[in-house]
Image (cartoon, rainbow, N blue to C red; front, side, top):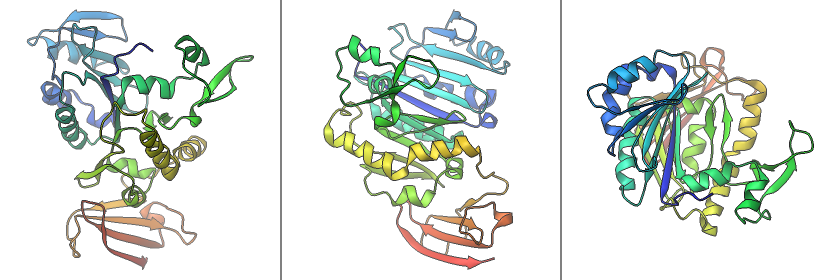
Amino acid sequence: MGLNQNEIIFKMVLPHESFTEENIFQRLQSLLWFEPTEVLMMSRGVTVPYRTESIHHVLRNEMKNSRFTFRIADSDEHKNYVSFTKLRYHSHISLLFDGEHVEVSDIIERLDKLVVNLDAITAFGMSRDDFFWQNNQDPKYYKKHNKPLSDVKIIPDPILTNRQRVDLRSLPGSVGYFQEIPFTSSWTMWFGPSFFNYVSFEMLMAYEGFWQKEILDRTCVRVSLYEHPWEYELPENRELQWRFKRYMNWDKIVEGLKTSGEASTASDPAIEFLTTQLAYGGDIRVNYYYNDDRQLVPRSQATMVEAYELQKNGVVVWSNITKL
């Protein structure tokens, strides 16, 4: 693709309720680890110089729109940028930085705070180059860049007749989406409390193949599959991606969500998280609500609750099943 292999991309998904003018303005400076030079209103194709004294006015006007994307970037071919996007279902923050000149740990620390403070649903980070190849569906790019097609599966395009495309399910780091929420197996990932409306918190925490795992706040979890984001081509790291993808069964989850379009709501959750009145030495209590058929259902419809108390490292210190 001709991209700088030191470039790392992060993508974060937020509920619209968190994507407010006040929240973004309060945290904008923590996202500007670089010297910004311009602001791009990408939805309108307009670029203006970045000026500290006017940036709030520029962003305020842009955020009045129901759909938008604006990007704050540097002058070095946009090797560093932060972009804000509002789509139909959710809002998004994306970052790109050159890891050769920026401490990755510093960006991780900033994102940890952002994910927690903005109640992010999920986020992920990976090499920009790998992000492209793991999600490119056009076989022509492989031929153009002399990359073998032997490791990917080619299938008929379901929309365009007489065309072929790469089956992204044949790649370990591809991203599947449901209502703009990404489900992926990448270098580093964050999962916020509302993400566990779609998958089991206990299942995620029980996975033993992480290089690093940390509960940041309540049920906000950051995990890394391997240490260095640029080492994605190492066979052992590709295998780590495959193992996690298969363990979580991302393809089936996305397929099922697209079919049913269902997830439990925050006001009547199927999975509940508690951080107070913990009696067994844990840091978090997780309640799963089931009906008589052992299906996760909203709390108001449940006939039993399966409870776990966990420490921050994911160790279960207590569990119990109670009939309701």
